[in-house]
Every structure is written in C-alpha cells, then in structure tokens.
Length: 129
Image 1 (cartoon, rainbow, N blue to C red):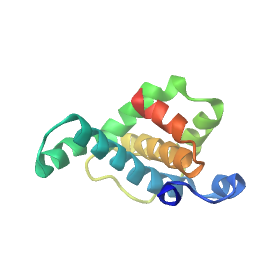
Image 2: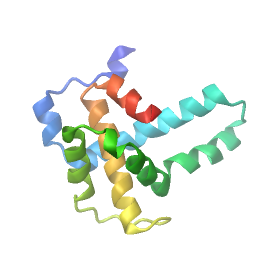
Image 3: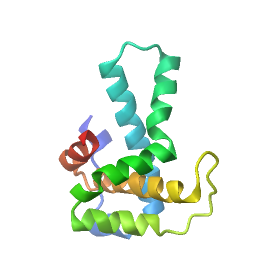
C-alpha cells in the first residue's frame, strides 16, 4: 500500500515539473483529504458529503486557506506558491475570479509539491492549520 502513496522520483525531477503539474496532483490530494475528514467526522450520506466537500475545494475556499497558512510557510514553500501563482494558465475560472483562481492553483501546487516530495508530515501539519 505504501507504493500507492510514495513517489519515486528524484527531488531534482520534481523541482523541474511545471507548477501546474504540482497543482494537478495537489487538487486530488486535497480533495481526498477533505473527503476523508468529512467521513471521519460526520455521519452524512454520500450526496451530503459531496455538497459539503465542495465548500472546501472550491477556488475561493482554497485561496482563503492559503492566506490563512501563508505566514507558517517556509521560504521554500513560499517560493513554490509564488511560482505556481505566476504560472501562465489559459484556463478561465467558472465560479471564481481570476485572482482567487491563481491563489487556489498556488495552494493546490503547494499541496501537490509536498505530496510528490513525500513530505507527508509537513503536508498534514499545514492542512490541520
């Protein structure tokens, strides 16, 4: 089971990935984190779980989460956020403004980067803030 969660790429390779690739992974990791937390802490039925999860994974909520944890980030993590926020993305947001979308992408990129680097303790620490 550990193979499912650990990434076997060199740090140098992960650092060379596009921030949008980090965000792609981070989107899935964060959604799983939210779903797991909801299942552990509530007795909701699947449809209600879905409705509740959306509140956390939408762009506005992710941008707010990044703002909340930003001061607790290391310089390296702030650099990851900056790189992802400034990455050219041709996808236009449907339910948020461009700035929220940029910051939510940066949040997802940070989550994906920490996951790909197998920094699960740090990832857990930040998500619990």
